[in-house]
Structure formats: structure tokens, C-alpha cells
Amino acid sequence: VFGLMGVVQVLSNLAGPLLGGFFSTVLSWRWGLLVFLPLEVACAVIVGFGSPTGLTAGLTDGKREHPSVLRELDWKGALFLSAGLIEIILGLQFISWNKTIQGICLSLSSVVVLWLTLRWEKTCKDPVLPIPLILHPEIRFGMIAVFLLGILHNSSSTYLSLHYQKVLGKSATIAGM
Image 1 (cartoon, rainbow, N blue to C red):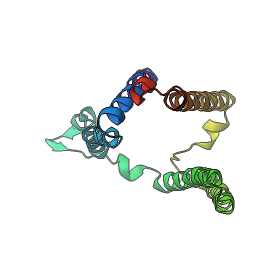
Image 2: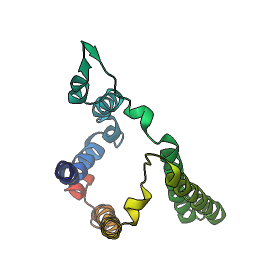
Image 3: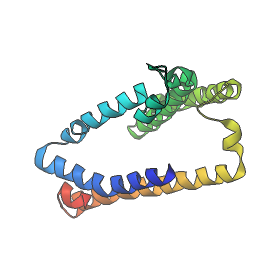
């Protein structure tokens, strides 16, 4: 699975900026969002109904067993985690917009929501964020390394393309390349 995800990530990193630059230069930046709608619908169908191999493996007496993966997910934990992360991102964004009071309030509320998330995940049968796994030393070190590499990658891809466009006066397609 990690090998497949790695291939997808590398292809996305290579093709994404180039296609994004092409769409924003030739058509409009909105096309970058619209072009993937068919793929998103296909992914939603696969997640909703399960993979084809998973469905055919569940055949018994000519009747199809429906996977209950969506019902067994930790929806409350996922909601808490998403809300906490969205709040911290919005809080930092508000601070950068010179709306410091709103940003600090959102950031503090994100700490409370993420604390509630940790409390919930400790009691959940099948958590979306398994706390013992995160506390394992090798996993924790790997997560910190991936976090730092993500910051390096995202900031360099963002600021280098801005440098090419704003300082060097190149097009979005050239910046994507």
C-alpha cells in the first residue's frame, strides 16, 4: 500500500503543478477543480459500496453481502479531529489577516477540541487516531520526520512558484514546471 501511495504521490507532485499552471494560464483556475469531478465521483462510489473484489468476495448463496465499513467508522472521532484541525488552520489564517483576537480564539478552541478528540479516541473501540500507536517511539519519530518534510516540501513548492511568477515574471505553466 505504501508503495502504491508513493507512486501516486510522486506522479501528483510531478504532474500537479504542470497541469495546474496549464489550466490557470490557458483556461481558468476553476478548471483545476472541475476537471477531477469524475474521478471524485468514482472514488465516492468505491468508498460507498466497497471495492469490486471486496463485494464479490462476500457472495453467499447468490446474495451479496454489503460491507458495513461505513457504519463501523469512528465518525465522532473523525468529526472531532477534523473540527480541531480546521479551527487551528483558520485561527492561523485569521492571525495572518491581522484579525488577531479571532485567530487566537479559534486557535484556543482548537486546543480544546483536539483535547476532546484525544479523550474520545482513548475510549473508542476502533479509533480513527489510535493513541498507543502514536506513542510508539518509532512511529512518533517517523510522524515528526514526515511532518517536517511536508513543511519543507509544501513551502518550497508554494514559494518557488510564487518567486517564478512574481519576481521573475514567468507564467503559471513555467512556474509549475
